[in-house]
Every structure is written in structure tokens, then in C-alpha cells.
Picture 1 (tube, rainbow, N blue to C red):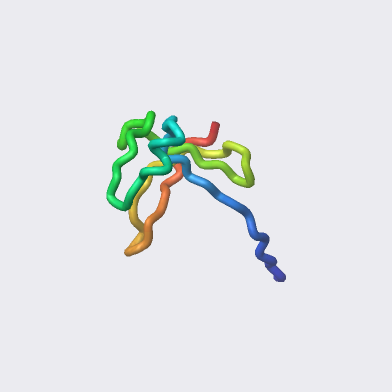
Picture 2: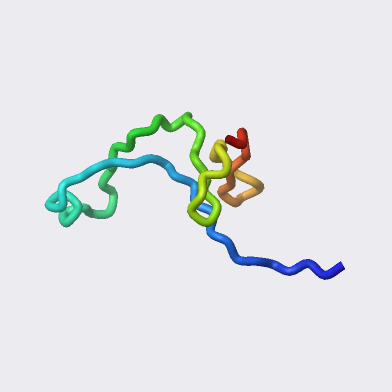
Length: 72
């Protein structure tokens, strides 16, 4: 069987925030940005720009990972 790999973009959205341009221009390493989502809330996963899954962040061995929890 011949299996080909196809590159796709998968994005896990941690949350959103709005900041004035002046604040963005002054951001430094170590600054903390408040997001609109709680740390224990499921993350929205998009595949090539389309929302496809919700998941929970975690680890798989030593790599960061997301466990799929629901399919909308």
C-alpha cells in the first residue's frame, strides 16, 4: 500500500485578546497577556482554517500534544 503525506496546517487556539498598538509595540520577553479563555477550557482546533475539533492540551512522552475531546 502506498501512503502519501499531505501537508496540512493544524492550529490550536489558546485564546484571544485585544491590545492597543502602543501596548503591542512595548511587549517584552516575560510579559503576560490575559486571554479570554480559562486554562482548563478545551482548545479549539482548526484544520486548514476550518474548526474541526476541541481538545485538551497535555504531553505525549516528552512532546506537547492535544487529546481530541469532541468533534463539533
